[in-house]
Length: 301
Image (cartoon, rainbow, N blue to C red; front, side, top):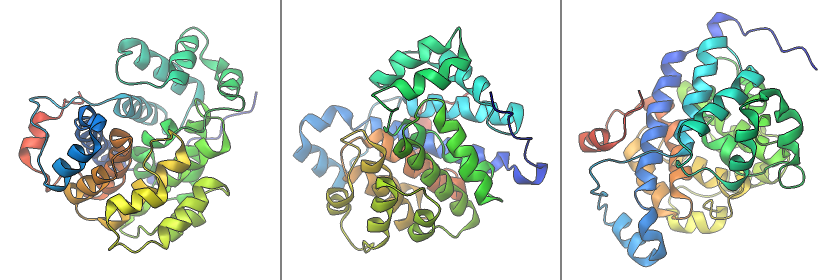
């Protein structure tokens, strides 16, 4: 068993930025999830989104994206770094507390097993799907971590990879998490560019997608961008992260506009909006979004 790294220096932590990111991630997650019932009718869904017809449910519930992001931030608050065995247990307890949050099949297999043996993630996570999950779960929860460590991009990438390994051992699942965390850190700094995110993302399909995204003009219609970059429908990090970060970079100072643009891409909208929300909100928080959205979003505490 490898020795865990020492805690990062105190100056590297920004809990306030992490909390901003979490609040916006949860809003994006809940906002995106409201569109799910319409996606059996994609033309109607697209028309409703383009017309900016806000979902009218009295409560917007968030999903596993937010549930696991909360668990991750709890571990950071406790330890100042990703303590992997503790994180595995927190993920397992979060899943056990409410299994109906929309977890994927792999997490329903993995997380219950970690309740009694958290350290077993080392053998169980790589065994998911013959080589580990390359899904978007590690990416959808990680933006607050990037905000937390935004002073040190190398530390961001390292800690993002460590939190990913607990559930998503495949290199693409890890790369997706690194990309989102780096984007959130750059967002806090006010220097978010897709080219820099791609440059700090491990080689592979996620990085290739980010490079395509970096070359895609921001005057491209979001639905067209999602056709070119992916919209999460394939439930893979490389099909999810490039588009979500493209919309985040397209609207770095406007969370509401970023979420509407992301929703236009359809697909796995709660996940893409959670990623976009967590990245943009790392800088903006939920400032500027309609007050009715904030009233409807399920509380975090």
